[in-house]
Each structure stands twice: as structure tokens, then as C-alpha cells.
Image (tube, rainbow, N blue to C red):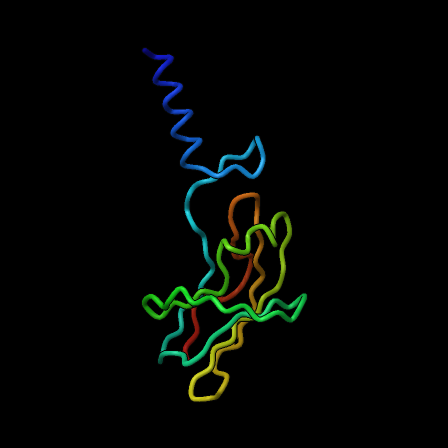
Length: 121
């Protein structure tokens, strides 16, 4: 019976985690880096990858004035390194947020190395 329980736990862990290599078990959490913007709602926002100049638009919505800078969809691009990203927010045609973030990723998730948590416009 104990052996079946151990087998069940191993199977459960296998289905609840993604594996990027055979020694790493990742959680099913979807990580993101966000910034809270106080003082109004942005009309437009995007993230610029500094190394390439690429514009990244994450449209997963705004929750309690928090805007996503980057999320785990970019984990593979950043795996085992870190890069600088710039979050830009626009209101009434004027750039009101211009903040740099350094973001890294391990084999499972992205994480913020540096950058502000919130701004007031």
C-alpha cells in the first residue's frame, strides 16, 4: 500500500509540474513582473526589450492599477540570464511612466532583479 501511495505522489507531481530538464521540477504557477500605477488609468502601455528594441504588449488586463511588465511567456527567452526592459505608460498622448526593470529567469519562471514596485502619475 505504501508503495502505491509513493507512486501516486510521483505521478501527481509529474502532472502538476513542467520539466525543463530531468532534474528540475517547476511549479504550475504563472509568474509575472508588474508595476502599480497610482493617480489614473493609462490609455496605452507597453514594454521595450532594451537589447533588441522590440516592443512587447501584454494585454492580460489591469488588476487594481497593476500593469504587467513581463510574464512567464518570456521565460525561455531569458532562461539563465537577465536583461533590461523598459515599461512605458501613456495617458492623454503623454508618456507618464518610463521605468527600467532588470528581469531574469531560471529554468521555471521569470523574476524581477530590480525595478520599482509602484509609481504615481
